[in-house]
Length: 248
Image (cartoon, rainbow, N blue to C red; front, top):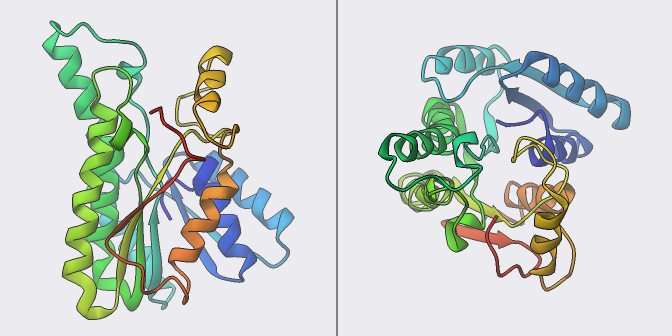
């Protein structure tokens, strides 16, 4: 599981640990990963969680990832790609005439949200068990747009095409491939820190349920897609946003 050190990734890792699954937690920052492992182990007695510090936007990480996975002697039954970020250059509206800054935003968005998924999936395909599951993490921004010049939403939308392609490629092996597209979820590091109160209030106001999502809400859906009952769900983009009518 990539992006496992915080937010949705951490909550999802914990959900699998609660099911007595062996979980490999992948993220860039070793100290944060170690802290996440301690948190899960303290709340889930007997949890079998292992940290692996890797930057999945770098194709050179594939060898270390494969070596680690193969050293366990176990196939990969579920691969969840939670890694992603809103590019810092897209936090504010860019000057449309500044092509360099716009291009930088789009490149950062693609690297953080698409490359990380493609490297993990293609790198582990030889080790993915027949009948296994792939879950990618999109966003409501793929449907409703995003801030800056739209690079983040466009990058998330690219995952939708990839999911459909994976489902077709891997269906003969019984492998499902889906994407989850959350709306605004509180208690994550997606925006690099707490949102301004006014913006958070606006995002919540635009939901039918009148509340922000919780990482646990999203974790439960990821767990279902990797479970036996979820095995016939494939080539789908599942929106989970409390009925939101606004992007992030």
